[in-house]
Length: 256
Image (tube, rainbow, N blue to C red; front, side, top):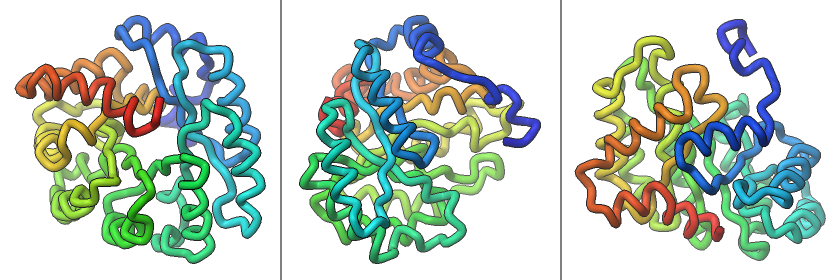
């Protein structure tokens, strides 16, 4: 991490999560991997087993391993494991998700009732659409609205590609990660609105869910402030739609 990420250079543990969620009135969460190790996934699962707050875990497994079924079978026995993720946007190969070995691993997830979280930048959307089309029965959850270039106020081709991806009904989307794609110190809701409006109008509420991206969120905001931003953005929606975004979509998508 660079010096400007000093706020993240510390441990964030269950007590910290409990504090910020309690203050925001959140009673259930899904925690998501950061390290690409089985050890971290097992640690997250151990936290979830003793927690009423952590309802599910998005872990990591070596999807390109020819023998990935073995670790998948072992770790999928833990009921708190709901999905897996690979940090695609950090791969030097922008077409990593189209690798045959990676797709073979993805094809194994359905038999274990596991979803897949998509962590990409907006430049990866065209190949992500091709990737998703290879797995029409797999549930995908798009993290951080595909990280558009909010800091530069660039809408295209992100908007068009997102709308194309949203035509796939097996794809859900998290409203998260937006403030860290804007200017960390001077972002405004006005700056975020074109992106927020695009997401709200592109996916139905039944396929949209609130996401905190905590503690990375702390680079530009905090848990309570971000949840209020999302609630204000959803003010014009019906009570049913707001409930979907703030809770029910996540429950359905992750099988909580």
